[in-house]
Image (cartoon, rainbow, N blue to C red; front, side, top):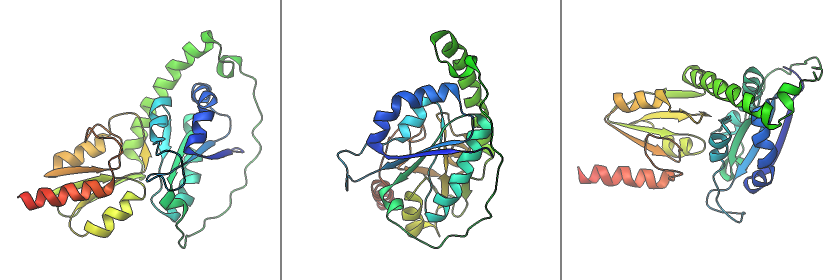
Length: 242
């Protein structure tokens, strides 16, 4: 892994950084690059509740979202590996609950890497229109490769239990859902986001009686940023109706 970079900011800071971020998505990276976006659902200490998962979809780049302290640590390394493997910046989306939580984590071994020299490449980094048009083709091909990776990576996983209802969720919503219904429901955690259809979760829908999407952006539910509480309330109401 080459020398890397990480920029951290609240969600509204990404609005300011959006101009270079979208260009960075076209030019790619040299060493790995992570943009940490601290979102604030519930507006505990911010002026709005914007959901920066949309930036990953808009910019056609990958995004990881940890569900606890261990994943927050582990996903930094994984995101850097994704960044270098696919030549792309990666957004790491964390939320208030994750930022204010703490738990014991298992540490790994530090890896020392050699410095990666900068190579002058006008056709990659000089994003005048003639170059950017060519790079758009590269962006689309990279997205296709990331989609294949998303289907194979352990970041997206399914925990099978009772198959009557499936829960598709990510981030801290996983802990909320798991604490309530892990013993009785299927849980699908989406740790890696892409702006493409998620065949793994579509397969979950086919193999379970019903599916609920908790706080997730995707084509499965047709909803955006629905809270876990709303999902669970809807699930219980549906059960009561039956």
